[in-house]
Image 1 (tube, rainbow, N blue to C red):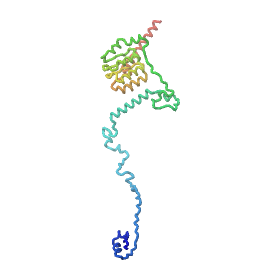
Image 2: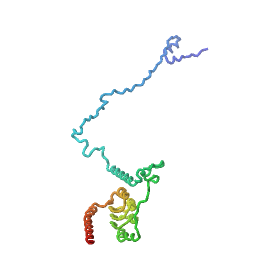
Image 3: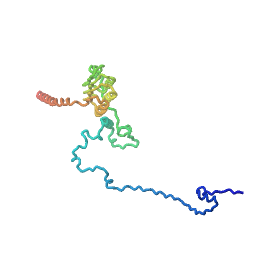
Image 4: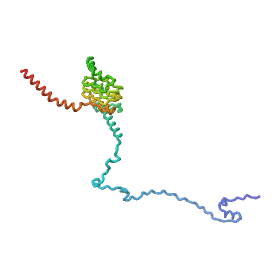
Length: 295
């Protein structure tokens, strides 16, 4: 019986040995097993470049000598200044308004300074205005003082012919000075100013308007009442620091084109100062005349 021919595996790889095997020739070959050992790649060390004198001092760096500004013939910046320091007008305006709002809040929310040196409780919150909130001990909240008419006769006297003329439709200049007007009258005046596009001048000087009346007036004007109003005269009244803040830092921000005269004009102060010597001389003469008649 024929035995199957078994071809060794190396015959597939080496044609010479395969041919010798077929012819029956015994080939004694020393088979050497060669192992290829891959050399392990050792990590390359990142050697930093040696520091040179140029690297230490900075290559291409400009050397500044002492006193270079004095010896420099050309100016450091052009006449218009450095471009890096330019601030747009819109940015300046925004910063100014932000500062005004901060000063306004600081002035209106005075409350108790340092909380009257009373230790604040653990449930005190800082989200509300500084030192002026309902849960802050030592902060005494009270309503603002308000002026009013002492009698119905006084009210009728204030709201007489001049008042009625100022309340007529189409009037551009409302002059209500020296009328003894009070905060009570401001409520009526505010209603007249709402939607009034005719009035351009409002004179409320030399009256008895306090902080409450100023608050009513400022609130209405800030909300858009009398949009064409150009000048407001409200000096020589009875309002305090709070009313002053509302006029100069509150209304001034909301109505930038409105001229607010809250302080007595300089020419009026000068006229009063000039009259003082005459009044003092007249009173002295009167006193001497009374003394002579008594003798």
